[in-house]
Length: 239
Length: 230
Image (tube, rainbow over all chains, first blue to last red; front, top):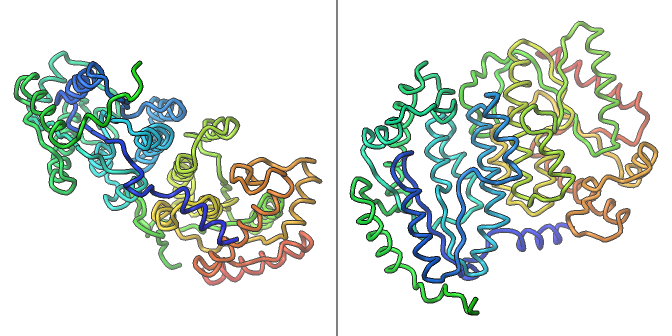
């Protein structure tokens, strides 16, 4: 019997790296750092060049969506359940799409990856080691771009239009301030500190996000071309 | 009363010294008599003047409904399911169990992290990962494990529903295409895992093949001793 468990475990657990032929590229950064624009441009570039490509974004699993939505709307979430529900969402996308596609030799682009959780959950008071272990089932990206921007710039970009900030988005659950804008400022500042600490821990490729969009994009494309042999990711069958 | 502890890293914002109540857990498979015992214990304790809160798996406001739907559709992979259950557990731990303990209640938990842990491990999860995941859990004051032979379990499940549950039969594990066969194999695997956990977590193993009265007497005596010591 224990033999059977052992066998199943071997089958299901982490794939040996040599079985993963795909490449995983993630972008991270504060709200308003411009990372979604940059990953979109990478996606367009690789698509138009004809590579096997898949794009995934944070917090988008259909199955877990209802629970997440309900929790946020009714403010039912604690730091721990907030963390776990996002990990569930991540895992659903990871196990059903990201990992199978990486094994099938795709380039997977992720708009936010586990580091978003590491930053946010740590700011909310979850134990850093616990959160990192929670996500230990997932592969680390081949390249993680970190769009670094001074806090005032990203805040300016987001708050310029005085948008209606959502409760959790503004970090209101932390009780930092009763004013959503003030709360958002403090919250983003702390997230920024967490990101900065992770740059060396996870080897982020930091990009100066105050540069013009096309200049950043050129740098991003150069990094990708230098570290990935893109020719291997062309469709072998003409479509 | 000694201060409560967490299994691992614990939960942010909880002051353990404030938790004055007791946490009693009853574990066992479907058909092991858990709910019968909990009902009897609740009556007994309330008669003695203790305030009771009962809790169980898949009862959180946050995700229980979605979890139920996901189980119907068989659409989630194993790790996702583990995390979904962990979310459900954490929600109840923070919003039900801990507040009740803070208010000095006795919490009767119809299953706890052990069933969740055993299910994950039988399905091939990394035991270290699961252990860390449930490092958020409070260590109960006492844990009863109702051990019933798989054959008895089959009989009781048939008596109750005339059918075996898909998940309790471990049909997602590919042990056998025959449901009856799969049920027996799966329950054996679960029991082996519980056996292993018995020493690790200090279960009070209760022979659940006996009459409900006999089982209840044994459990009550142990709880009495625990409350006396408290």
